Image (tube, rainbow, N blue to C red; front, side):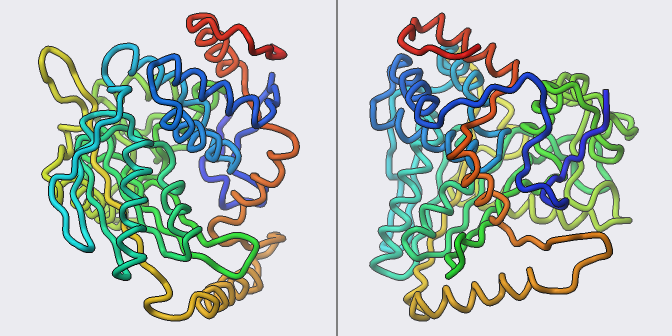
Length: 385
């Protein structure tokens, strides 16, 4: 094995994909159609299947390979095993002109999140701000997708979600918090918006899964075992995380030397916004809730849409935000560095490239696609692998 760079967004690569062998490039609309048909075969409505496919395709297009088609097998197995409810049932628990709490009834997180942000945007259009807290949801893909929904409407979009335990508190070793992304985006007058979409841990589980598929080691200090020693073997880490024998370090790392308490604190804020407002599951409860003899993997989310024009004309805001982005990119570069990026730039460039060349699919994902295709009898698709 070789050691992988876990934070490609800090180097000069154009996107955050990992270097892989045995890659096939799938035409975007072919893959989108296949994903939609998979979910339709699993008894989702056409509309819901389209939403989920768009979330996954958007992730892959933007170079976030951990949350695109790589996740298809996970969703497939969780639906077929009865862990996720394929039929959308969204209930409004409480509502005010600017806020709402909704219950997703353990149906597909992408669909729940899409509708929650739509509701937040609707409220923001009328009242300037809209906030929606969600309980009893499931994994919803990339959080940035829902911030982008707000951005497209001329708004600032903030999204959080909790997740299964993997991260300890500072000076602890017991996994208590999830990778808990804190995501925010804003429109600019540039070619792309500002969009920061990342976990509050140094690395997220999806990237460890990707490293395991590619037979790569992690650097030291990213994951610790239950004795507090560095753990680097991605396959072993996957097993140990399931048994709570390993923990992902928060942003800043272990202890207080590199200010790991900052990542821990932001992760806790995400946990509060994603569970306390809506009386949802929190901390270790996200590892599974037993109901009627079945274990359900539930999480909560929070969505905030802020209508820019209630503060300042949208055109002026875009200009102001664009100025900040351009000034950062034009600032003095470190020795040997050719370029400074702003959040959302690499994803924009990856999307531009992948729309032309297709979405890269490694050998293990090819095998997933072939298995699903065979089991669901989706014989109309002819792949090159």
